Length: 340
Image (tube, rainbow, N blue to C red; front, top):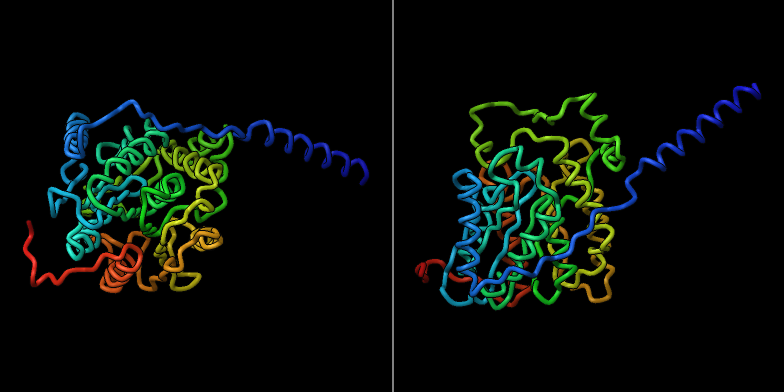
């Protein structure tokens, strides 16, 4: 019995040593590249469109600018989409919000998105942050105040940007923000052998449970994704955690999350992590009293798209009310205005 105990202790030591030596302690760094400059927002936008065309971006996946005025509007909205997604993820609801406030609106396209899964696999998270941060800095030309909106991974990126640039953001909307995976097995991605192990056991591509070739939404989302792409998502999550972005957020924040009960809830991003993150935001001594969380009982991970079955009238009403309180902007009577 003693001999067995010694063997088990030795195996435990070996296993612990192996895990410690193969854990990726060093998180990739990101530093914003300030070398690019633009005369104005329109020049920036045209160059982004040129890049999208050159990369073969699919129709309606490219970035989009909706202007209600050639000048600054009282508020502007910047939308950041999620992992493997596109602006279609938010257009159904956010377009209506912009219309209610007559707000200039910009949808950024993150690198590696809207083209093909190989591009997605080969795009590091640092490029996501670079393009999103550039969009944020340029969007200050669109409005007197800026509302930053992010869904899923876009919410994680928006969290980082709001923490880094509290002076640039006047209201933050987080829709099903990705702060953690829903299962613990994703932690294998923290180890050097994680992706190779997944490839051995499951292949290189993560298959969607939904494989209907007639599903129109796959024109705007990647149906299947490389596991190597998910590694980039893990690296982004770890980087934002290292930056302690949540505790730096001072702006009024609205969190949307889908939760009906333990069996019926968001299965793409951890609701527990979302609520924990929101509590961290509220603990900031400069946190806004306007900040609050809104539970969507009949919903989905994606909340703002026409491609999901979600009761969006309540979501729209909540968004309009929050933005008005957070920025002081008043929604207009659409019957009395004409699009410029």
